[in-house]
Image (cartoon, rainbow, N blue to C red):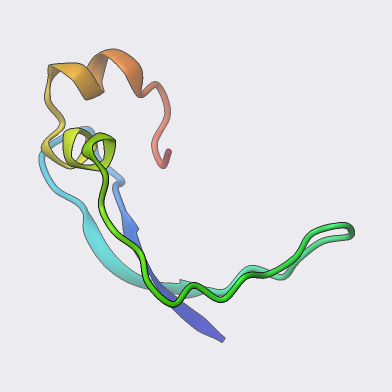
Length: 62
């Protein structure tokens, strides 16, 4: 089964919308079906890859 995910792979402006495999829940985990989502201020900084994001995000994907 597939799902859509916004993925940032490079330390530069932008991100990509990709289809990725739905993860299989491990023991003591659950899989939640997301009906709606949104972008927050932190996401916007990471997308823009501005000074704020560069000073806080150490690893990609984050």
